[in-house]
Length: 193
Image (cartoon, rainbow, N blue to C red; front, top):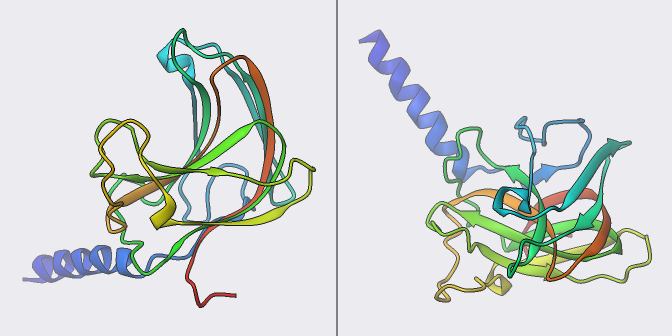
């Protein structure tokens, strides 16, 4: 009986976590983990035959990412920073939020953000370009979930109850460089200041 109540308590605490998802995903105060205590992941197109190079450095609450996009033949090149919302890649409920907020500085390159849903099985996640002046200064950018689209798949609405990570990616169709920095990644609501 005692074991059963412990299991029930654990199940309830896990189920309620998604409903109370912390809006702050990462303020880069830790060298390896996001604010949820989960390690960041980095991938690039070398897993698909590309030759993109990437480097990241966390310093004073900012992560700087730079490199050179060298796409695989006939495909876009990319370098991605993945911020998991759950240590076991389980879906989290972000439906209380309107979208994703970034404090970002872009020096060069094309940058996009995606909300990665467990319902998407072909990696064509709901994404949007991040557009700011390439002036090396930090800008606040808010990307509504409703503005995020899939690129090559049927346009389906993003189910915000099934997001397990957020990705920020540099991308290009030809050889090019990227250089950007992030100060903060969070969810936002329309009534948040």
